[in-house]
Amino acid sequence: MENYFRRIENISTQDELDVLISLLDASVYSYFRECASYQEAIDCLENIYVKPVNEVYARHKLNTCRQKSEKKIEEFFQHLKILSADCNFAAVTAAQNRNAAIRDAFVAGLRSGYFRQRLLEDNVRELQAAFKKNAYVG
Image (cartoon, rainbow, N blue to C red; front, side, top):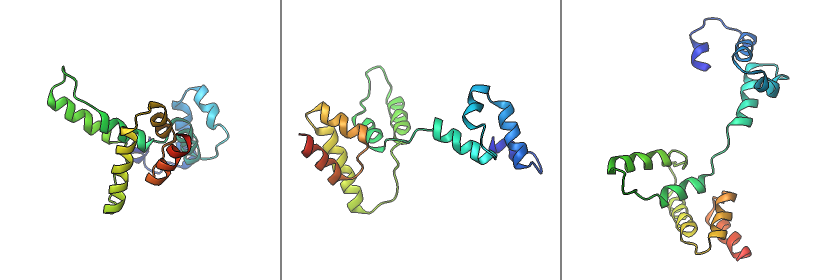
């Protein structure tokens, strides 16, 4: 929508909202019908449809991904790049990087699938929090 609106000169915020309403199904419109502006409507729709990324689970998927016998090495490499997109990699200190790597190894190396699943579901980002959570339940 943003690209579309950039091509239209002098479009008002009310016109943006009207265009959005005209393009969506009535069942979707019911979610934001009380919004007064286009931005409010977009924010409302994002809250409904855009789910937050579970960084710990995304990194677990990346760290435990293995090449399948029928996949070429290039395909496996591309798959890893796609998986890495949800990992929220950022410039961090060496200590933060170390703690994240230990947390990821801790989660991946747990013998208990139950405890691993609980940590992955809760998106425990800090190493000490992951350790304490596992210590209390196990």
